[in-house]
Image 1 (cartoon, rainbow, N blue to C red):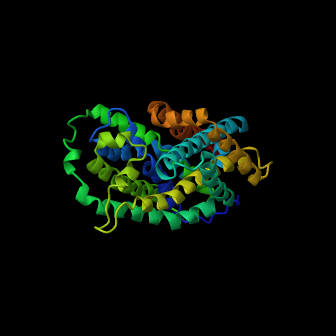
Image 2 (cartoon, one colour):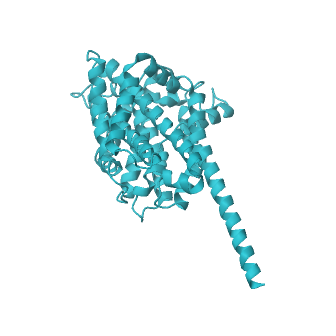
Image 3 (cartoon, rainbow, N blue to C red):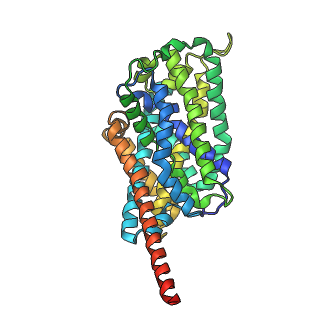
Length: 380
């Protein structure tokens, strides 16, 4: 992995965070797996934007306070080494869990929908090998790769939305608020916002961003871009498939893409969706592998070889993914226990940064009071 050189531009980090965030709904669409979801799911998604801004606020404020410092440096600046290692370990565990869960989902999708007759072991190697290479190359390379692949993903989403208009039935979005209560909509919007982990990419990549990068602008650009393209994915799915059928599909967007016809002579071009999505899957896996390995490398005070840590990480995740029972637990955690996973992410993504922020502000306030008190004594 490369050193933390501040060479990542605003455009690169926006595309990286937005792309990683979009890859989960592009390959799985967890918002359709929530309890009591109906035709108002697009309202849930829109409202989750507000919750996301509130939930992500502690991380964004910390990043702005500690300019050009990554998550390890920020934690160590606020807490003592022991507590810092405990907090760093929690983030690493969350990154590993996210990596294994997403890898389990895409493996299930590939083996059931794309190449069902291929041995599991072979598909796993094909998926993890390029992800490991991307992780080894580091954050700068991951950011530059996103500039090439993510516009292709955006263009594909727009294309499938436009060519699917003829099959869309807007009545499947009605009646708005007819089958949902305000409490249910808010509850699901909170779950959707809580389980999104991609803002932490900014937390880890902060030290690698160019000094001129405006973090506030980057964050709001990313989240607005995400909501726009997420709606371009979700609304066509609902208006073509309906929320009930889409909720039962493993990959609702791929199922939708199979219905889209490109003029009369071009049909069944869902392969285009797969062609674009596979590099995106690799990018997301490589990014979360990098987040975990980079944090672990710094947590152990750089005593071990970076590439060795990456090797251990991928051997460990490979061993887990090979065992059917273990990967089934990961899938169930993501698809069934929505509240459990959301609480875990909320605790680590929001509450810990909030406590760090409050600790920093209290310490600064106490230092300032002591300094003012000392100055007043000298004047006297």
